[in-house]
Image 1 (tube, rainbow, N blue to C red):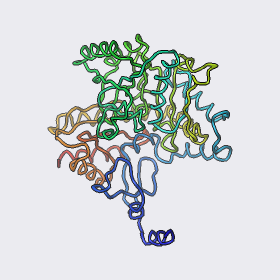
Image 2 (tube, one colour; image 1 turned 90 degrees about the horizontal axis):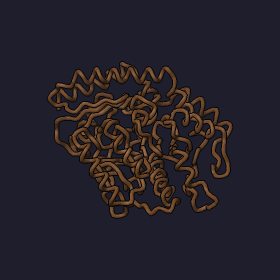
Image 3 (cartoon, helix red, strand yellow; image 1 turned 90 degrees about the vertical axis):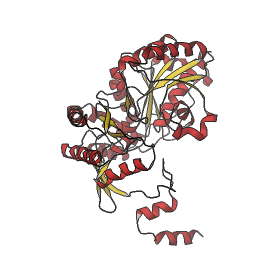
Image 4 (cartoon, rainbow, N blue to C red; image 1 turned 180 degrees about the vertical axis):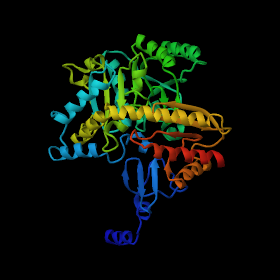
Length: 433
């Protein structure tokens, strides 16, 4: 039987055919979307397909490869590390790559962050943040069992992360199994007073352990942006009531909003910060959850049961740590900081050129993130969305619309010519939609 399967597979000649035989892709309904595009190489901001096509990666492959694909500097650092230490259990051992990375992260994180907890991906980074908040109160003898979150939030796909996410298109089948979560609207100038009043009432009615939020930009909700001045009073109420503030910077972290972290633009600092995606520059998976000494000290005890019992086999993998350290070195460099400013300037110029287009509404820009909404009603994963996706592919561009939201989040290293090609593909879309 096995030999017959191998023989049958050898008859399949393309990666697409071989892929269809066994692979189940994420966020994919294979019956309605059976085809995938095989990529055989990536360099800088260009993806090279098996059929010879080339695509400008306009979203840095889900906001990970922010220093460009296959960055030579990062590859060199990881290659050097591979020859010294590949993997070691992180319970009872430590190593230089993890120690060095922890020091470099603390240097660029908001100054109240003191401790670094390693894990594997963005969902588990937020999962750990939620567990820290719940167990913080448990260790103090407080019976707090509820997490506060924003409407339309997205924090990942594990059960705790799904629980605090508010997009039912992802979570519908599992909602009966979630932890206790209550929600408030994302604060705006128009709803701030009513949102504060609602929060104050919820604080009286529920035993809230923590508040998890995407600072300044809700990514999966459609790159929805809001202002620090409207978030700050929400965080202040949480602080007064010892509700642990958990900033999910999995998407926003590492320069994308114009500062190292979106939380840098907010005066009230979080107790916990969740990081992944561009943490390791798109090379190797890893995540980090940082916290204050206040959080850590409630777990520091002679009682073993008060420890944080969460672990991953590849926690603080040395190769991942080496990639992340190299990424931080690039992030703080003058070259990358200037590139971030340049992209922001080009985004603003492009935004001004299309702001009066009849099909364009709600242009929003923060750092290297550019988004706008089409004045068209459509489903998040409907036929029109597929047409938009295919239009960009036809133009040699990889963009992944979120419903009627078109957005760019390019690598810091993208060239002006490459960014102009993405902009031109958007202009052609607006002419034809």
